[in-house]
Structure formats: C-alpha cells, structure tokens
Image 1: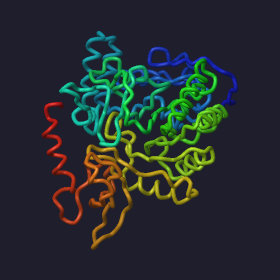
Image 2: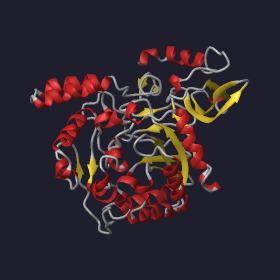
Image 3: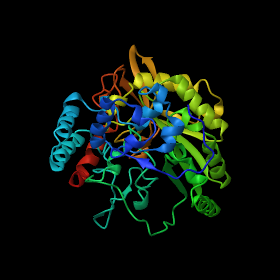
Image 4: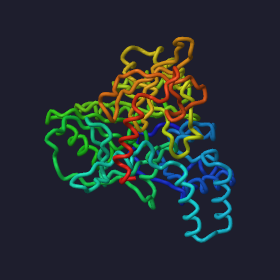
Length: 407
C-alpha cells in the first residue's frame, strides 16, 4: 500500500475518457482497459486520485476490494450485452448507435427498483414532486439539485441512474421552504470514504462544519449517514481527522453499507468494519442486502449466507456495535429484515420482519418464508406453512392499482 499523505491535494476525478492517466491504471493490460471503456458506457464510472493512491492495493488487482468497489468489472454485464457494446466501439460506430444499444441494455437492469418512480414520488395539488420520495409516513427523502453527484461512484450503487448524463428519470429538486415539522436531518454521503478532505482541508470545509453546528443549535438531530463498505476506508489518518471534526459539531455519524460479493462478503470484514467504527465513535446502523438493480447478479449474496455473515460478525463485537440492523432488504413493501433461520413444525424457514413499512401497521410483524439457499431477494422467497402469500401482498396490490397512473 502507498503511504498516506498529510497534504491537502486538489480534487481530481477521472472517468472513461481519461482514467488511463491515473497512476495504477496505466499498468493494466490493454484488454482490461478496453473492458473498462465498454462497461463505462453502460454504468457510471468515476474515480479520484485519493482512491487510486491511498486505498487501492494495485498488487492485488483485480481482486482488491476497493478496486472492485470503484472500477467496472467484466462480470457486471452478461456476455451478449458486453459483446454488443464492444463490437460497436471496435467499429467506431456512430455515437447515436452506441447510445441506443446502451439505453436498451440499461432498461433491462431495473434502474429504479422498489417502486422509486411508480410508488414513491409524492404529489402536491396533482403535481408530481420528482425531487422527493415519500415511501414511509415518518420520513421524506430529498434530492438536492446541487448534490446529485459523488466524489467517485460505487460499482454496485442502486442510484446509478442519478449519475447518467442521459438518464430519463433523475430525482432532483430545490428546497426553498423550512417545514415546521422537521425534527431530524439525515445526510447520506460517501464523502468520508471517498474524499475526507471535504471536511478538513477543502476551501469551504470550515463553512460546512459551521453550518452543521447551526443546525444542531436549532435543537434538531443531525446525522451523517456515512457509507463505509470496507475497513480499509477507515485507515487513512485524514479520515479520522474528518470524523473528529464532524463529531465536534454535535452531529452524529451513523454507518451503513450493503453486503456485496467481491468487496465485503465475509464475517471477518464486517467484524473489523464495525469494530473500527465503534472505536472511532461511529454508530453502526445497517447491513443492507444489495438491491436488485444494475449489476446485481455480479454482487448478489444469497440471503442464507448474508444471515450467516451478519450473525458471525455481530456475535464477535462488543454490545456498542450491535446497533447494526440487518441483513435488510429495501424492497417495495419496506425494509425487510432477516431475523434468522429456524425449524418450525418440521419446516426450515427464514424468520422475517418489516422494520419499516409503507403501512406502519406492518412494522415489527414477524412472518415466515420457505428456506431457499439460493434466494437473494424478497421476490425470490415463497411463504412458508402452505400460505398463498405474505400478509402485506394484498394491500401492496391495492397500492399498485391506486398508483398505476404514475408508472
């Protein structure tokens, strides 16, 4: 690994147009670099020098978890679709032809899962508020117009359409009101992992921290929902400086990540991730199941294995780290948590519950699914004990019918 820098570097991002100029990438084979160009036509690709110089172990590429986290991999597309794009690029086909092929491929990748467009966008006076999502009664998700980018892009990101220049549906809005009922503010960000200088040495870092202090001073709870996918992201000294500065404002830092193959699919990785977070004063919050979107086949981990990893990790950390909930699927009905695998009346089952739901009455109600060692998402599970459907499915059909005009 390269030595951690203590300087204040200028932020530079690299994508499919210039990534070969970044240290490390020039050592990749010609075939690998071409594959990245092909994949970057379908999936958003953006990386920066901090990740390349500080986090990726180039001696372990392509297996290095941070490399897998930030650089598109050949297995993310099926062979047929990969070859379609590759052939067009080799022939130097017109950009319109390439774009049409790429658009068709993206449409097959479930770009807006769990009813994000059809169910979650609220209406006010019959006008769709496309910069908001209101899936749960208690919370509203706001997509600030100026914040729909990232210092780098995760290869598994379920919000990948947000980062496509030609995306038909982007969630984006400008908020010019102060809702009187606003009690808590959560800011979802990958900045601590991908560019911690944002909170330490960037020109407006101090201004950002003062803003956090003002929010806390109003009596509202401010939580930074930090995305850390691997313990290595917590190693550089600059990350620890950033964490300390944020905590000094009175804001709380909670952490969350999906469990994804090739990156963090082991008990030891999660145990170390949560242990380091607790030692730094962070609050482990969620282990998610990777959503059924984008390159989900490449990253999928069966639910049975996800439960084993969660249980193995959570049982080997102190009680302060057992705030992490999961494995949790953010599915159409809500956040479905796997509580365990058990034998009941001679049948092996998944024990499940909704820890958040479209209908608050669904929350905390246990239900059971037939054990399936290969299932990786709620839609792949079947009700146990001869039941025809899960308890929420009839009401979900009614919700779909009421919102069918929005699809």
